[in-house]
Length: 274
Ligand code: C2E
Ligand code: CA
Ligand code: CA
Ligand code: CA
Image 1: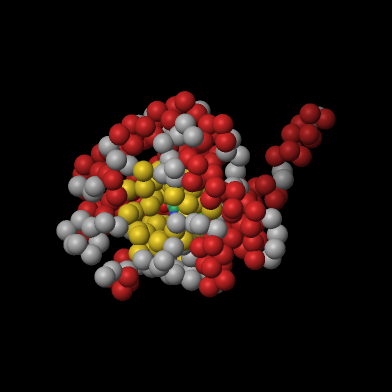
Image 2 (image 1 turned 60 degrees about the horizontal axis):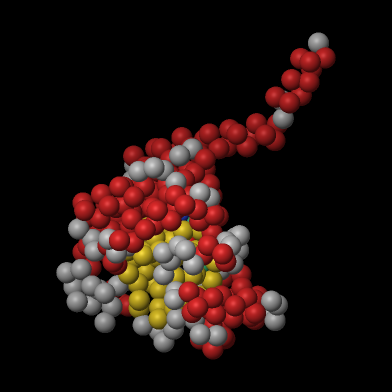
């Protein structure tokens, strides 16, 4: 009786039950949304430090019929837990490369780069490389205009396997960026072994720098690291002219943030083309 009682206690946890059922509902809702084509991509312009359009980052949006726009922080973790990110991630890659391929026909857009976020769940699948190659082939997008954004935590899991996958894609021209750099645990000892072309400085350091926290020192260190390793450095989340002046002073090559542009639907990007 005592054991049963203990079991009852562990199974009847209302908070946990609420969480589980909320997750299950979200999961069901996402499957419906996929079939219903409620997901869309927005694109945030990336600028050279002197303000020219260099490319865009594709960002996933869910236009929910009742809830309106659901932010990715709400549904991407669930999509990762349920493996639905595999389907969703493949869709994102296909959409983004489709646009990249249409851009190739116009001289105003042919040089632009497309950055796509890759979930660790996607990347660590054995067929990830084939999937990317397949999307490139199907869409006809130029591999050397595609940049995949990986997080530090992704990079430290199975380093040898990760290097191999990255190298196979690098061989056809695909480039890689480390997203939110500085917030994870990458080790300097293997960073140089990875075929990376860009470090994206997490916006917390850009903001911290202004409040005279340690941000300024960290930004300086990342720029130095990028230069030593032959990578470009992009400052994320630049919202004010002061922040731009600061990251320019520190030697960042690119920036991204509301100061330059919010993420936009495809049909509103044209004002940036010249
Ligand atoms: P992230 O990759 O770090 O993307 C940048 C986030 O910062 C975006 O949020 C963007 O809207 C926001 N942002 C850009 N500039 C500024 C700024 O100046 N100020 C502030 N406060 N925010 C700015 P979003 O679109 O909500 O995406 C959140 C996260 O969701 C992304 O962070 C990324 O980790 C994930 N995500 C988005 N789309 C995808 C996707 O297609 N696949 C995967 N795996 N993850 C995605
Ligand atoms: Ca990103
Ligand atoms: Ca980021
Ligand atoms: Ca982030």
